[in-house]
Image (cartoon, rainbow, N blue to C red; front, top):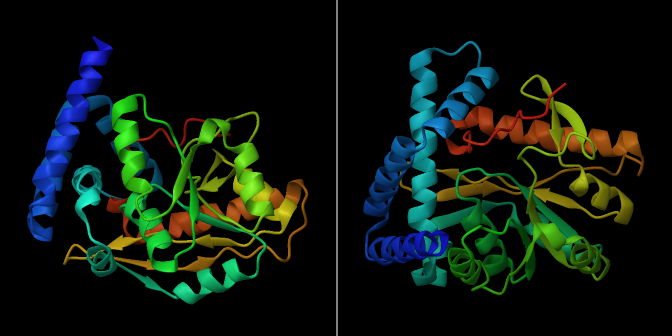
Length: 294
């Protein structure tokens, strides 16, 4: 039964990609919103998680405002599906028109230092387009740390799209050795660190006022190997294009110890929180981010 369901989902993904690739950018956006509405309809548990997360993060907001953000967050998920499923048909010129970077020279110059590079973002707007376009625009080969999908067929398709511009991918479950190798040879890695981490191995830092388990691996790598961290959180505009500010997450004042790891992780959490506050509808609220708190 699982094999049949996986096959069916893969065929649906391919069909959505075929349909989406033949639509204008505005109609693709509308298709994404419809997909998001479908996700919201069939995922009552996730919808409740999203509502409770937003209420916790924005306790002063009204029930109506929270429901609006829930709805728009689902629309964002649908838009991601519509865009990623059609990504194989996007020309380089199309990507250049779809997303713009502010201060891209910062990223390129940091890479040229030869210390390696950590590109850090979150499940915000279309993070897949972000990772894909960085490699395309800068010509820097990016090793993307990904979470393997349970549907192996769909996973292969998505990874094919991710690596079309010269990037490579590796599963987060067996990435440690390859990550260290990439950094030590001056390479660039990209990862997301905004989902719930382990309660016993990671660190608890404030996130929307709650001490929350947060992945410490980016901070550990940056401090141990003296690697610069570049952050970006793309913002979708009314014309359906994106802009991403290239920002350095500085840590030259920190030492490679528990305090340094805690402080650097906190800085990432604060940067992410500020991005979410400006555009709350663009973050994936459906995840149990506050699964482990103190």
